[in-house]
Length: 103
Image (cartoon, rainbow, N blue to C red; front, side, top):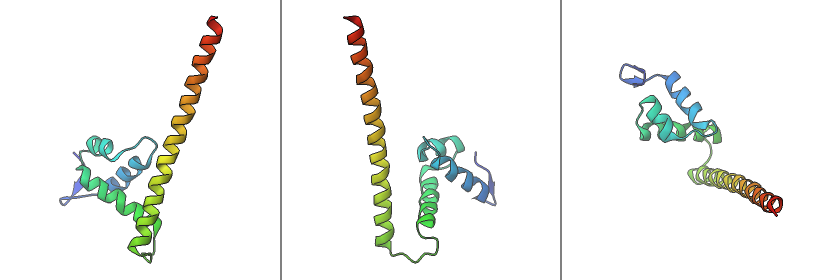
């Protein structure tokens, strides 16, 4: 179970959990299970950390913060698409080489 101090999670645990989610391949669900933290709780920590990164002074409107989060989500999706495309090209190239080599 996650380490708690007076019924609350320690700041160190929160920071570690957020760091693990942000690592490549990290996910809220996986980290929550690994640390024994409720998924919704961890999602709230990660979301709050992202908002803090976007607007440390807290001066942006909610609409501006949502727009930035939407754009970040879109960038992540496009990065996944690019990676998929690279893997598909490599696979196709490998199949073509096998076909050319077996004739």
